[in-house]
Image 1 (cartoon, rainbow, N blue to C red):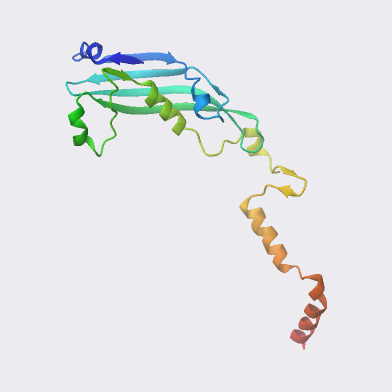
Image 2: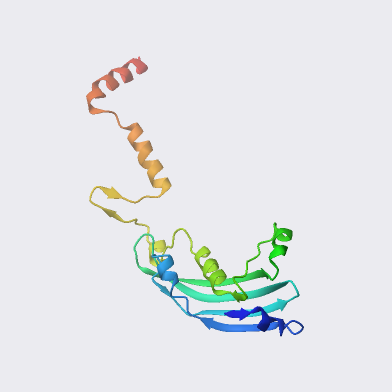
Length: 180
């Protein structure tokens, strides 16, 4: 997924067609929650101009992540459509402040860092397996349990209704005063 600027200029009038499968196992080192990365298929085209190269990419693959509740392996399919622009002239970066553009390292355009970043951005905050989603019970242990916001609200309301045993006689006295 690397091209020199000279190589790309040969495709200036025709455009460059891309269809490659790349291995991005280094994502596991960047984000330790990633268990496995399938081979990533990158397809699309590149439009090459005199001052920039624009890649129209479709990225497909699969990441395996742990379930946030049960730690079971969950397959996360990845399907991204993106447009990545690389400017060939250093002086042109000031003109494209609103648009996100990439800087070229030396005379080579490397798409792998951009693809790596896009894949990392696709990882959700919580990954829930289908089994955990279907279960009504949340995980629990000795002196702890996970509950939904609704369950926590119900428990809070029940605790408000309970009277401190030390004040139970006083509460009875107050109830008698209200009734009389």
